[in-house]
Length: 332
Image (cartoon, rainbow, N blue to C red):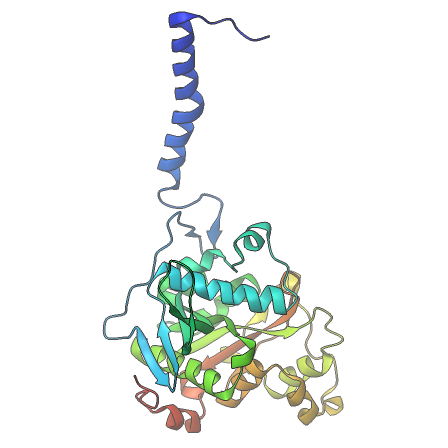
């Protein structure tokens, strides 16, 4: 039955309904969410903000961190630059690889998560590949990206992305006062997967590390595929030949733990294992990184993840010499 309102009664009823069902809930929503979304927080109870913090040019750092020919490595300083990094991630993770996009990611054609608002975003831009669109100023192409998250940006490090897969609390507790940097969401457009692009990304990271006085880098690295038995050679090699020292080791969370020592040490062919590892993991090994205990299956991205840790003091001396102790090899 529909009430029969007329004249003044109808107006009053409409006003009451508007205030009760529209204005009041909206006011509560605004008041409640100004400090973050209850029930939706990063590890360490860091709230998810409605309006993401946008990175600003660091004092004395960049945004341009280096150049190599037509390629530039820089920090994103505008929303539009972060959106371009997200589009690149979508193209690599969801279109080229086997990640499963959410409905929102599929609609926007961008790889987005709640950490993007907290991180600094490292970009490699090709100034020789200028992309022109109607009614827009031509701009060079984003061809590579890395996401950088310092411990002091997320409640002293308790809210790192990798904490969702690995128990990094004990690692952080063993090194009080150390400054940690999490590396993540690394990808490079296929035609640019060359030594020059990777070298420029690492130059940008090294510059950032020196500027912020970082003591150790951590993060998740991915092996493609979700069947650990098919990855037995790679996982076993990392466990037997590149396991982190106890002081720097983190273990996969118990309910997602997948054993890495699937083959006995004598059954692992190091040369074959190295050849089968992804280029990013091989790069970590060359620089001096080691790996944690246990792997984690990431079904959304179609990968098996391992924990990487790289104390700055453990970086191979030849790489520090290559980039320069003051990160001046490819300085802009």
